[in-house]
Length: 452
Length: 128
Image 1 (cartoon, chains in turn yellow, red):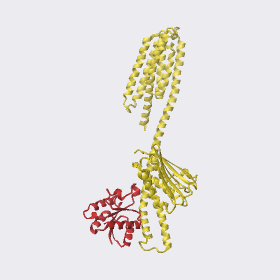
Image 2 (cartoon, one colour):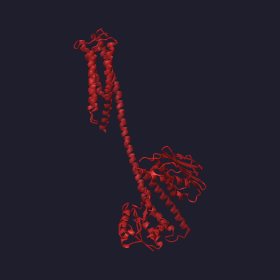
Image 3 (cartoon, chains in turn purple, green):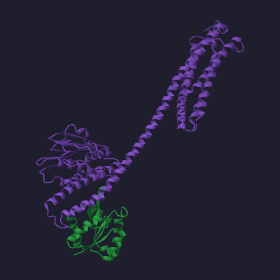
Image 4 (cartoon, rainbow over the protein chains, first blue to last red):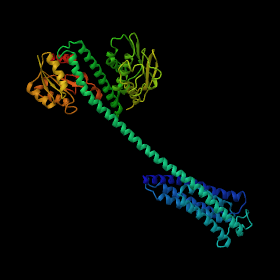
């Protein structure tokens, strides 16, 4: 954990170092341009050769750093980067001081450009390092002023700019040094406090992100365990249910002796109905957990007509004795689609079974499939009882059943949630339009060619 | 009347099938485990075998069906396979599409519907 945040900090510094190298090229250009301008436009006499040499020196070490960083192996430079930042800072300070020395020392207003340097390093280095640099800058500049004042170093005046020998004025030296030093330190203080805050925030964000990721992983694992549990339980329920169902069928069919008493027959029928419901419930649960936990779809080329015919055939018994008009309309031009066959049959089975279940005799059920662009749109529409407006937003939720059917018909509330899940697994969307008493229309759209 | 071997580890399913078949006058032999069933098939030479898929292992029924169909003398006995896994594993069995790799003659889904069972049993016995 700690190592990781260290590494993040290194990356943070490295990024800014690269940026610093980038702007240093402009500094070099600026030095050359400013010198040319001063000499040619303002007619100021400058030691141009010395200045260009310093510019060349800056350009040379900048190129060196650029190459060095480029060939630095990734993730293998924890402490090196900080050292690199310090070395670059020191070289910058030395170059700038030499430059100031050749261009009038204390008389050169460009000394205040040191503030930019202070701000940049303040963002790069930890607080202590920035203050040390501020101290070095101040002492080097003050040292330069004093040396020139004392004559230890030769003063190079800018001829044509300030010819009044300010460098010999002790009061001015003290005043400038004071203002300069305090400016540098105050700038450092502000920059460092802002930079530290930013760094802290970044660290917090990285930690939060990691915590969130971990929590998310835990949740996914729990969800998987839940699915596994559901599969196990429903599977274990299904086996004895099948035995009970088989035995009741045997009894009801009179194979173990005639059931003559009407009351006994009625009780057996009640038991049979409840068992059947449990059977469907466990089946739906198994389907749900199986489809939810399936990692891959079994994508193949499908003739949608075949899929719908199969689905209708399976659910036809649900039509019971009802007199329903069923119409199937499929766009002739629809090519074979690419989807999971088993699941697509399941989708149509569910939607059509619902239409049959909730539409009264004399009603109509339409199944319509069309295409637009690369998308297939399928619709299952009925003239059934419809869904109350308040239930529509929840109708695809697991275990949810509309208020107008919850008492009157049996159902698990899992079918539609599975349908939606399957459509979404095929990168599609499903929507519903329904008016209570008039009918419902389920419409889903999905890519014709689902990629594996 | 025919002699029918029922192989399933669920005693209640075996009982249900037994009652149904015996009510029509068939003689039944039962085995509650695959290997035991295979041995009884060899010893009793039934006219038909009703075989469950999931027993000791998830596919023991398949293994037994292969063994039976590779046996020089037992390979002629028709096999009616009991399945309940259609919905669980995502594939439904179908005589037409699955016979290449599943050497059984027909399928019956659990729970058992007596009339469906009887009609399939009769069909297989006639074809024998």
